[in-house]
Length: 73
Image (cartoon, rainbow, N blue to C red; front, side, top):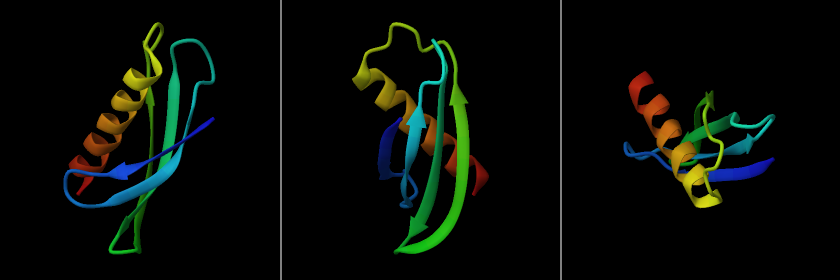
């Protein structure tokens, strides 16, 4: 399990974790905040992640988090 945090393209900060439960799959779950106030939670999964280096995994997770959050707003 690894920690993940960042800021979405629409200004919400997030913190959470991601894990690789089996080869090629990655699950993440995060809590969103805006100006320090709770704004919501989301989770997601990425597949086909075999052979991706750590920096690539981090980028893919952050892009997926941003996409899931901004599409739900």
